[in-house]
Structure formats: C-alpha cells, structure tokens
Image (cartoon, rainbow, N blue to C red; front, top):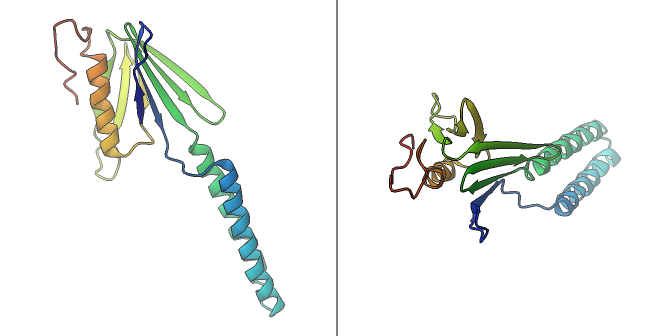
Length: 174
C-alpha cells in the first residue's frame, strides 16, 4: 500500500493498493521452464529404467503448475487506486482485463470495516454513499486492511462533514 499527496489543488491524496507479486512475467516463465526441465529429466530417467507410468503424472503435474502459476501471476497485477479530492472519492479497480470505476461525493462517503461472522474469514472494508458501496483491500492482510480503513476514515471524514471544517470527528465504525 502506497500513499502519495499531490501538489494539485483538487487532489488531496492518492492511495495505491496492490498485491505483493515478487515475480515479473519473465521471471515466472524462467521459473516454470526450469521446473519443466528438471521434471522431464527425472521422468526421462524413470522412463529409461522402465517406469513409464511416471511420464503421464509428470505431464499432469506440469500442466497444473503452469495453470496455478498463471493464475497467481494474473492476480498479482490487480490493483486498487483511491483518489480523494476536495469533493470526490474515486476508486478504480484495475484487473488483468477489467477496469471498474466508482465515484462518491466526499461529503456523503462513509467508510465501514465489518468483521466477519467467522473467525477464520477476513473483515470487509467498504466505502460508499447513497446505497452504493465498493469493497476495498481484498488483497491486504488484516492489519493492513484496518490501517487503510483508519486512514480513509481520517481523510474522508464523518458522513455529512468535510474534514478540516472544525468538526474534527472521524467515522465511528472503525
């Protein structure tokens, strides 16, 4: 999660939330090809010794590894951009082949952090107004999601007030 304050008069802050993907696409391909090479060498040795049933299982393993690695690499490029200006809260969700944009009036925007009914499930961070809500921080760990909720509540302010107008209170859901 990264935050940046712009010098533009309208934009107060821009927060980027993204997954932690340590592999670039090129590195992911090199990793996959190295595993393929090692597995095929081992399967070839087994085939040479007469253990031919190893070969189809090796192919199945490599196919599954390729699929899972591809899904992981695709999800690693997902990001959320939250822009807070004097009068608007704009949330953009940028995925592999999709882009969503949600816009809320800042004065009426509300930040909610709802706990899950089950202990093993993460909480949900929602920003919205007038019956429309947008979930944020799905790729964050719980402590980062709570931190983001507090920061957004601080920046957006309580419903019906503009931060810095002397009211001074922050949304009580956090």
